[in-house]
Image (cartoon, rainbow, N blue to C red; front, side, top):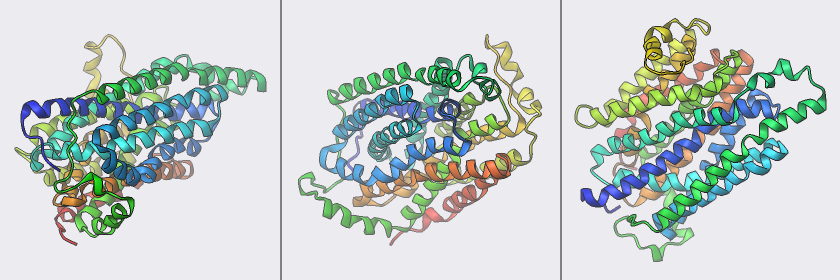
Length: 446
């Protein structure tokens, strides 16, 4: 891919992509608040509620390769516009879903939202990787990550404020006291709260699509590539060649387990909180996102001046392992550690910051450990893939499937052995990423 070298030229695309990453984060991390909300509104189990993440992330696996082909045919800029419009359609589907209170329509909306995001992600990740020097790619992706996770911090808070106020009357013990008709009436009232927030989201997505369509966003292509000669059969023929690139294929697996671990520490954390009957369970994702933003900031400072991408990834995985073990064995009732660390915040902010149990606190700290993983795995996986950049990018996006598989697995385990014991699922994920950081990314060639 041809690089955009001048700072004046690169500022505009970086700014636009930063806005896109904010949109990614806002839409993606709404799922954390949606899970307990839909579990109540649609009267479903914890495992069924976990299908929110399945429907959202499975779309990446199903559409990443078609997205890559589409980008080859219509270019990055038109691909971004198309992705945003597809997302707007997904947001609009929440309107009939809310009025009918049919869980399958909610899942359909999430699937369409994920499809649009898949197209956007397939475009912007290699774009931001190749817009400057490769050894500082993790720092640029970290900058995008701040936009992404800042939105992830805000979106559960905003959705909770808009739709999850006065939730006491929707508690299971209170609903049991109502007749069938009364319960349906009150749950319909709850579901309809989603209508205006998602109408607003659809409007903003369409507006951003129009802005990008008429912007001066550059549309680079791989060196030596001619769009006019691209055909679907020739495109498909490149896939085996890309898969044979060892470090790239190992990177695909690393993305799979990383995304699974990230979603468990973010979205699925709300299920753990709900199992403990925490009143603030719907906003727990915001805690994780806040620590991820801190991790990204530190990543920007340290990479590559003080730490290589590989070493940063290694240190992050070690921290992830330590925090996972602490979360497994820490108390899920004692809140002393969080209070000791953040009691001073109450003197700064005019509102109370809900305290969380020690076990939950260690999981939210995984946000800090996870922050550098995606920014480091991505450029290490794409290093030296040349003409296979778009195919490799699509395969890496497909690996977001980990967010569809591992969180429901965690939810099912949580129902059987308890959500705290189910956290053991995180350890093999981090150990594999450690292998990729130490050796896997060095296995070049076919």
